[in-house]
Image (cartoon, rainbow, N blue to C red; front, side):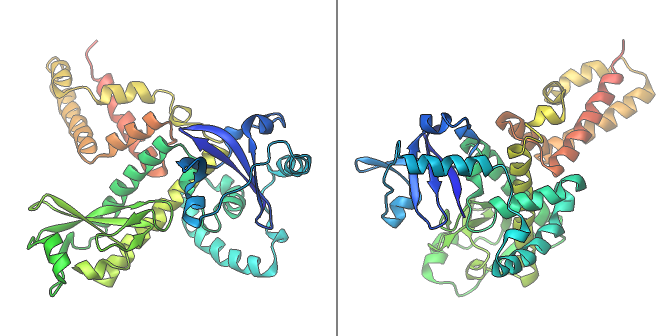
Length: 367
């Protein structure tokens, strides 16, 4: 599939790569691309890193391959201009080969199971086309967003996956597998208080490693309060570490799938301009979060002058707000706001409740 990729160095796009259908790749200076009237910062991107006397992407270094630069080649520019003039058009199912159509048909069913939760119905068809165009194959989805935004989502991924697991009704305790090899005994000691502590999508296979050295895309974590220690494992090698019910493994894999779909939806609304950020969703979000973070003595001073009925309601709302903050939900909302990310469906629901509580507390303030 022909595609364009921004080449970034230290957070700045310095080049554009054209990948042709036959696999050939051509790089050009970013100014050349801008002369065609297009924005290079809107492209999914690959990070450039210093290697020997050149710059290369991580994939090139791993493969031992480097791409020749074409800065002003007429044929490349002509091909590029034709491509970018069509690049706003999403791939249509009718244009797929029979084999690709069968593969997409199966994947489409899986995608449709999740999108009701993450996107309004009016965007479903467009999202499916966007998914077909950008998310099929081995794509590192974090390349569509900035590094600091990826960090914010990874932190959310871990926090939310733990919430999903904890709410599943399964035992939170992981039993250490007996008869482990010496390396694991040294790693995990004799602690018996291991708890599931979430998962993170690193973006690609080999983006992470378990503590036994296996390459992972999804890193799963278990934490021992007694040892104050975390171990990293994968969904397929978890049985090397713990005695785990297969249903538990299905639960953590389901969390992976749900959260990855949330990330895809987030990229979709950003890249299609449907939602530019959290302030586009909630115009008062900064002031609400500022009030939300006021210390308890601030609210207590206001409470003292209210009547009994107001005080009871005030205390009830303040306690609800305290629980939301303790759950980590408010911290996750703040992190998304700081990163300029639209709130996920789950965080939107949480913010709506925070906003409702803060507005109720404000109404109870004596004039």
